[in-house]
Image (cartoon, rainbow, N blue to C red; front, side, top):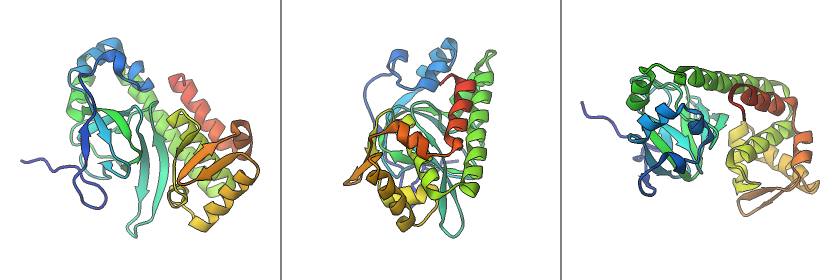
Length: 254
């Protein structure tokens, strides 16, 4: 049977291009990849490919077979819950400290979409290659189990945050998570996209962003946001950010 090509949410073929020469173990810029046992990395590196992911592209879709996993390097991927009426809500970010596609057995499906938030490079591994690795004895199973628990913890805490905390706190939490994910204080983001990510109207998120900007915590110009006062942004967030980060540090070390 011919495999169906991955497509964007608009139905266009997924545009993933080549992004450099041969991959060596030392060249991978993803912290979660570096947590894999050395023998696992050696087996996987020959079956890995560095790809360029375009902003807005879909790397996997909910309820469709998962064919590949991604270890982002400079790209950022959002986990998106999508309703039948078209409404969406972001339930987590995956950057250079994580892996996109935790349901790794061939034929497995993800319960949410994976949409590229920020364009960049990622290491692509087929689900079949990772499944082969899991047939080998070793600690890879334990590591993936810890990561799955961290992702589930994010989803649970995020659901509680969306239910009980105000827009300003949720906005601050999301910006902190994006800062952690991209590893730099400035990144591209539109207010429309930010509103979509936290599930509110654009006017509502615009007011929250203006408040943060008025206090000198962030600066927003021409589709790029700069975090100017990280401690103040942490103070503006709710306890959910700290709980999420503590969970990741406890399970993964960062």
